[in-house]
Image 1: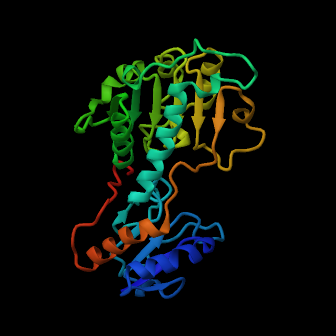
Image 2 (image 1 turned 180 degrees about the horizontal axis):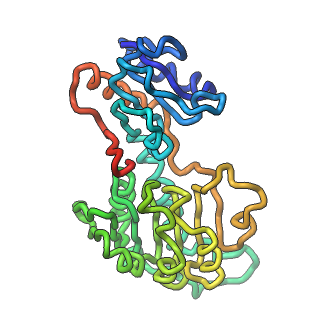
Length: 306
């Protein structure tokens, strides 16, 4: 099979060896006649001249495989008619679990309350995890992995999604139950995709439903939170702190108020990196499925945007 690596050139050295090792029967190319490719491995930023890729000439392609979990910058391309699959791989899920569990535990234990200033704060004893309510917004592959991990640590975990799809061992709320999910969230973890329905989901009214002093951890998409509303809510202590890994503009501009606000911790979109070694086998499996006309893994529903 002939496959175009339609991704920024900086990714080639890391990805090409892993992809070829996972799929030795693939001819991986960086250029060529579009009509001659059986599939594309794609990441936004290609082409690198700033134009939008026209998928129309790829008449033989049976698959467009995204290298990233988020596909909001791809599904809006009107020339895309080929099947599009998002990236879901074990390394991506583990990275998200590590990030969310680490920051949730930091918030739960109140680690930042123990200043190294010679004062013995023996009265600041955290509750047990089973006494702490955590809500995960977004119960896709990553949300389920995070919710399961936090449940394993003993937290009282509530999952919320539009569908309320059941998840073993976790209370799942749906759609209209969002206010209840927020009221329970002493720690709120946001892992929703960017869709018209999720943009500014956490506005002033919904942020006001959080418990006083709650912690918000956003590792989903920057568009989920109304930034001005969040800053105003932080000034009122509801939430008490926000850990933000994703933003409407990235890199986050140096003069953005998030950098200077004492209630915000900024991390540079590092929660869940797609790692070539763990992701390449997923790409290889989908390529083989496409060639055999078998059901594809993680096929995107374009009407829903993910």
